[in-house]
Image (cartoon, rainbow, N blue to C red; front, side):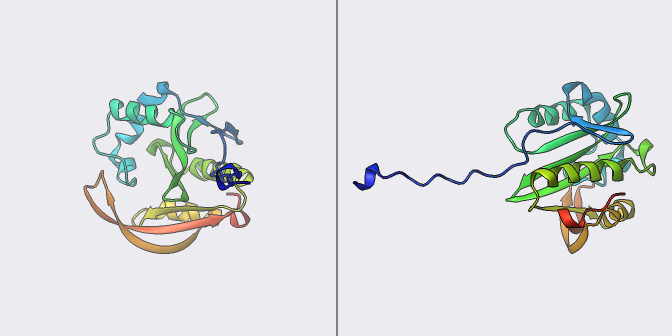
Length: 193
């Protein structure tokens, strides 16, 4: 058989976790975002106490910023999960996302400040990571927190994340470099909150 007629090897498909799921927990529903979430997102991220702990959120943050983000997230062009954290009556209180960046899966999350210290973030992050690991069992999930975000670091340690290093990253809301504690977790290390 001539070279041009030989069957070419198939390119390996990039593994991904599949479509963004709907996840029920004891108190929450995690679901794909909707354009109608824009007002709630803008209200939450318009609070500097929330946005200052996130690297890629500007301050001030407006409804149009939320709509621009939602349109990108709902495009279906990525394998990323961006799950709305909602209460039983579908009130949008935050977000947990798992995205592929530079060949590695990264987990991030935020919660409206008025829902802090109730265990909602732990519940949501655990549920999203657990479902992700069911679909991608051999994957390492990377994450991290700003060094001055003790609550988020406590949450990650409680769930089983390990600290892997520290770096400086640019935070839009703070308009400057911030110390960032890098973490990661594998499926076997995930603990219930």
